[in-house]
Amino acid sequence: MAKKIKGYAAKSEKSPLAPFTFERRDVLENDVQIEILFCGICHSDLHSARNEWKNTLYPIVPGHEIVGKVTAVGSKVKSFKVGDLAAVGCLVDSCRTCSYCEQSLEQYCENGFVLTYNGIDKRHGNSITYGGYSTQIIVDEKFVLHVPKKFKEKDLPGVAPLLCAGITTYSPLKHWKVGKNSKVGVVGLGGLGHMAIKLAHAMGAKVVLFTTSKNKVEDAKRLGADEVVLSKDANEMKKHLRSFDFIINTVAAAHNLDPYIELLKSDGTLCLVGAPPTPHPSPNVTNLIFGRRSLAGSLIGGLKETQEMLDFCAEHSITSDIEIIPIQKINEAYERMLKSDVKYRFVIDSASFKNEALEA
Ligand code: NAP
Ligand code: ZN
Ligand code: ZN
Image 1 (tube, rainbow, N blue to C red):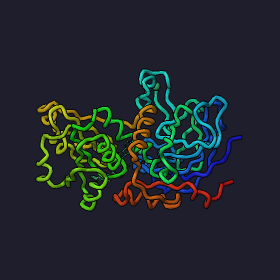
Image 2 (spheres, rainbow, N blue to C red):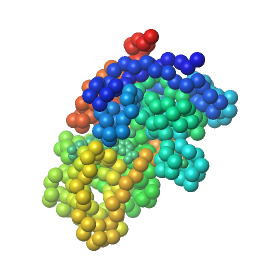
Image 3 (cartoon, rainbow, N blue to C red):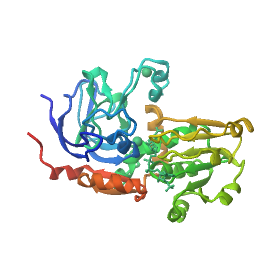
Image 4 (tube, protein in one colour):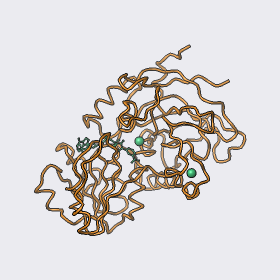
């Protein structure tokens, strides 16, 4: 019999998140059952809960930055045992046979991946997937990550956001070969942005943060930025014309991209990872043509690279800067995230679910 699980869900785009009881499947032979300890709150959770991307299936239980402890494994599971720490990111399945899946680029699966929440789980009766704003999750072993042993128990809340904010910034930094001779720009200091600064700095790059928030300047330097530019100040922006190899843009709202494209060297790339609900104004083509500059995008990362990112973070003692909240504060956290009032990721302490009743 499937077990009842406590979670928090939004039932429509206008309703706040509220307690929600649901069932998870039984543990199948390849499954890992995880008791969730911590789950990060990504801006994508908010976009999805409020149907800002117009693709939400209700009720929605968001959460794709999951760290927990293994409480059961199926008979064929080889790499996890009960008591191990485990992590789950944005994906819980993909076709596993297309050319992208074969290269562990599951995020670009030709036949459609299965998202951790708001996904349709084709292998399990086309059920809707429910994410980490809950006490337990059951995931096929292939989509479960190992938490490196170097991380101590006290690090675990700060490890959770690596599963989305970490990999979403690590993957493009690696793809565009950021290293010690690179000058890298990071646009927006939120959950993704602060991870981009830490990671690019650890890769040896010179890092410049572009922010709209004056009060983040000192903090950005503490996180590893060599310089901070207030993006609304045209004179400050001008000082960096044609000087960047790579800029990663994490902003969650539509804005003019031209001022950033102008800062790229020839052959430089502006990579968009922020996914605003409305389109950016179309950029000026001349800026791209003169200088052979590229405008690109990047989606999370595959399983192999996500494990590589976790190992890299453990090696460099990198975790996310977080504020821990009980699940009961989730709606407040969303409002504060919208005001950029968090340094720099909210993380749910799943122990707080004990204060919720299981619905009959
Ligand atoms: P977040 O913590 O809310 O950070 C976004 C940052 O963008 C803010 O801290 C702010 O930085 C800046 N910003 C927000 N509104 C702005 C505006 N109107 N004008 C200029 N700057 C603004 O969000 P997040 O969790 O990092 O996520 C960022 C975006 O990435 C979201 O759209 C999310 O859905 C998307 N995302 C994409 C992927 C992917 O695979 N591509 C994965 C995860 C998330 P400053 O105060 O420094 O200006
Ligand atoms: Zn995310
Ligand atoms: Zn595939």
